[in-house]
Image 1 (cartoon, rainbow, N blue to C red):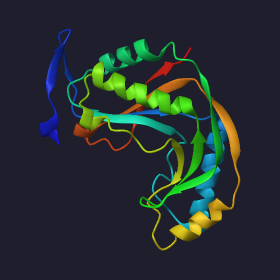
Image 2 (cartoon, rainbow, N blue to C red; image 1 turned 90 degrees about the horizontal axis):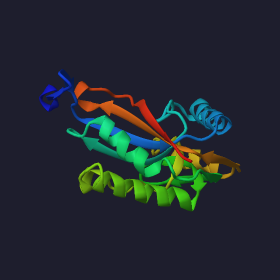
Image 3 (cartoon, rainbow, N blue to C red; image 1 turned 120 degrees about the vertical axis):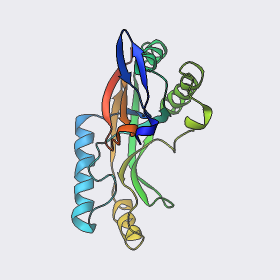
Image 4 (cartoon, one colour; image 1 turned 180 degrees about the vertical axis):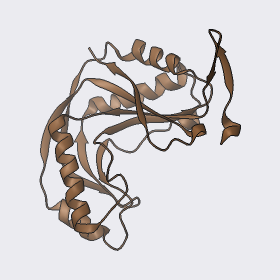
Length: 198
């Protein structure tokens, strides 16, 4: 992967950018996050380990790859575009699933999330200059419980959660940016900045 790294001079210092993957998310309230961890643990105890079993609760908004764009530019453009954005409510109602990826999730409902996703994609393309092919729309907004569940037990897992009810609400008041450097073979995302709404 070192072939993907390059050096750039910045104020007399050498900075390695590399291929970076950014993920923009909303994080729910602490109480909802704790509920999600409880659902994950319940599923794990009943059916074994699964993908995203240890990930924190979040709603993915957009992600992209970049080699050349400095992080300060990304942060600046997002701040200019979103610091006056109004906070909004996100409703969570029961569970859903994606059969192809064998994913179980919490349904989220908010016109504002879709509006924000579309605007964020526009900003990334027009202001941050991320190529269109790297800023494709994500799937419907949701909070993942588990993904890539074994084919042998997926129906049983879904039957278990489809009979449960869950209803909550939280205020989305910021965008959180996560990043991992693929050139450095980083596998985990780390928080790099947040943009608070008005």
